Length: 311
Image (cartoon, rainbow, N blue to C red; front, side, top):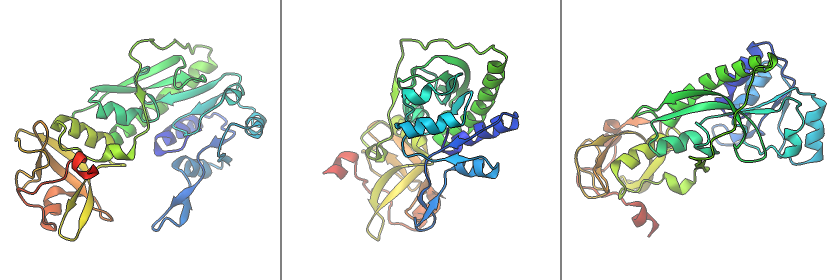
């Protein structure tokens, strides 16, 4: 059970090990394509189809029919990686060996929907991936295996996700070998240090220049490449929303939101942030120097703070 690109290496690794994957559960195809008129299957859906595996896309697992359908596949174990649907107890009870989740954090820190983004946004220096046995609670189950990963000062969510996906695939493969050998042991999570990685709210992505530059650098990294932190500015043809994909902390300082130089260094509540890569609506990501050639955003311009924009 999985949906995004993060889960594809795990599926591929399981298949490559020779396990019989009787079915793949994923989110239903969603509108996409150039104009959003086509239904686009998830990355896991496409990977399963390439291997000729039956794909199931239920809207919910909270029904007797869903339980019966899963039971018909007679799974020994269910593997879950960023699926996107809640597994109720009736589903968790179907496989005799349990449901194993590949969770992208060092539990109990960052339980929930957006552990990679939240870890980076909080300035964590380390994260990881874990194989845990699922319970009814939100990522509360006991853990069997862990792989730790350092978060570099400029690493973004896309980069960390890719590295964790590969590490997690190898970890889950090892877990299944140990399961077959009767050597997979689960240990309860610590009761201290619990934090929750709530789903990213769209409002969080707007850059508030009154915050410290270090916090904004982490915000940009945590939301890159998608959904992307952003600011809004008059660029000569009306107000545009500009995504910020890469930054560095500057030694300069100035009024929050003030453009301090010709290199797109912006004053913050504490310090300043130099924008290195941005993206205009409908355009490809571009270096800040290329962006500045086509807009009216010179030194001294003032970008609205989050508070100003709300007013």
